Image (cartoon, rainbow, N blue to C red; front, side, top):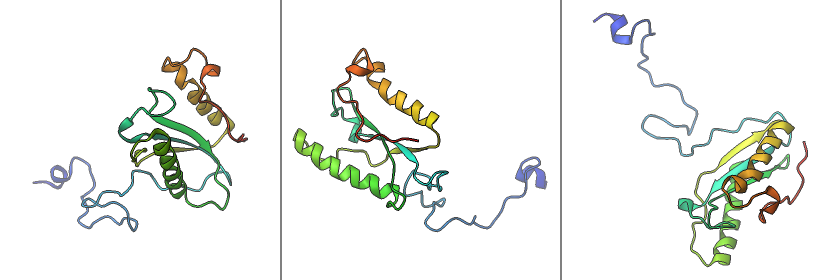
Length: 158
């Protein structure tokens, strides 16, 4: 068999050696322990981060019978612990409070979550608008102002 056919037309020869992977990273026999990419240093010292986390098995237990996820914005301190540690702490504290308030058993949250570093006031505005419109899109209210669970705890300014 010709080398071109064996490797694919024009493809470089296959490597026999295992690729070098970062310590603790996934391998063909050991999948990645988490589905998140490593966080790169931000363009800003203290970026705003947009989070979304869903309830365990998408249980509809938040604010109304239709709500199964939580969106929020946060800005870590410059010397803050790693983001994953903070999210784990937030889920732990909120789980205990929600379970007690609703008299339900944990788990409350799915293990995974989504996060996005916001790099500009424009991206922050777009995400804020998206979150505000969720209840309107779900036909829970007619206007953003009518949603009782919306609000701001702290203003995060760019």
